[in-house]
Image (cartoon, rainbow over all chains, first blue to last red; front, side, top):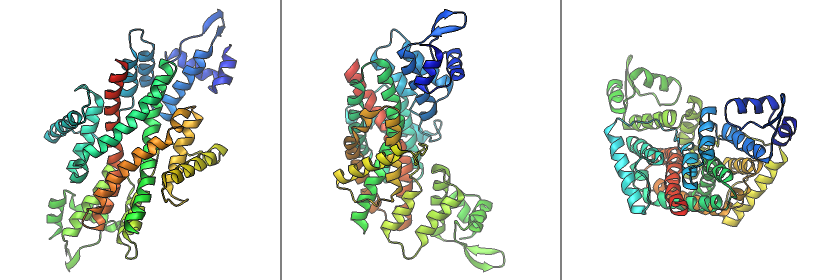
Length: 209
Length: 209
């Protein structure tokens, strides 16, 4: 298909498509003449992923380029692709206090939690640092009763991850798996937050009314 | 105690404390002379809540004033206070598309979910709208496999809410309960997100390596 058709199918304006090609987010079409190129179905899929990363995920163009590069790297297995996709969505929004002694304590607490849950996770996993940051913030704010219920929260998080992975493994190809990891995490966090509040409203009504 | 002692105990500079009093976030101290006022333990607790709302929660001064007003309103029961606290933390970050027909469909889907789970939730609950917004975004992006697993996510969210409420009900007073609802939701979402990614890393390693 020509760029006009690609633009129509994807909903992305032609100048934007050309910009993505210049920025190495999208592979160039196959050149058929000096001013024309042919695109195919893979370009449509890839454009959907790019738009989702930029608009829903709020990623920068450089971060999108990293995800795409991981996807297209020939030697990466599925686990590596998912790892790369996952690292793009591991920001917690909690300011880091990595130099404080309490951060090292929080890291040790999360490592102990990981061990209790029987999880195999690299020491350098950004998710481990992210969890330690939030735990540190809870302790600094005197919310120790939350910090003391880590195992209950970890069990619920594991149930969520089990559902996430069931969805991911049923996807037909690596692009679509990466899309599930990224959108599933970004939108899934928001979905879970909203469902958690719905369940809170229900339970709070039963407890206190 | 005098303002210098309140500042030392709370870590909040005296001019900032005076600003909070002017903005009706903090009750004025009891005036003992033209230039002096006495503060007590409740001022220390309240300052901690105000700082947490502003800094961790990222709320505006006006939003903090609303939470404080709900806390201090004499006729509000615990459920109402928790409701007011909860409404401050129900933003999803997903742009609203309330005028689109698919939003109404998503609202109907979430209502059906709430019914299947046996939850009692007001039709006007902001959490219901928030959940519908995320569901609509997932459907628009073609992530129907996530949307089709709503019940699994709702069960996990309910387990999280059960732990949340256990923590809240053990708090000694309404201020501290509201603090648990607000910090528990804001920091708790980040904690859950990080734990979910840790569990994903573990499960993804087992599945794909």
